[in-house]
Length: 150
Image 1 (cartoon, helix red, strand yellow):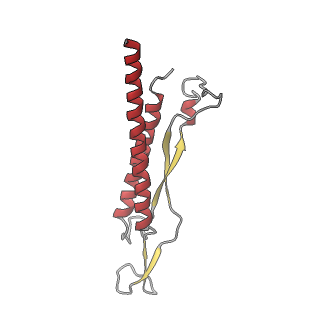
Image 2 (cartoon, helix red, strand yellow):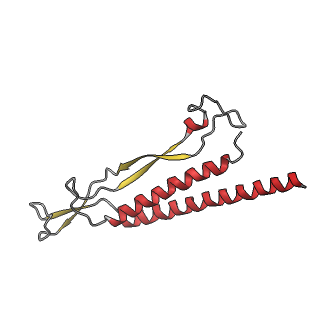
């Protein structure tokens, strides 16, 4: 039995949401990058979250663990992949720009600053919520120890 399972789960959330914030920062930093080493404009990156169900059902150590309702419970989250957004690039008419096409249009990244800031707020609040879970779990564990002492 794992006494600190809630801390492990919240810790995986902290890691995932920190990586999401790092990804958003990279998107914002490249909002005007019209030329990359791969050619073309920067493409927005998006993390793909995945539950860590295989850890919960004990595949790695051949144990099966069920939640109190008899269902298999996930043991956190992880970033499965950093995907790319399929939205087409934003086109702007700038015939004097070095990356302009034959018609005078420049392909800018498909990064929307407003969306990135909204995503940053969501990721930040989720990170804070996971911190609250850890603090609450620590308080509950300390209370349990105090009860056992007294």
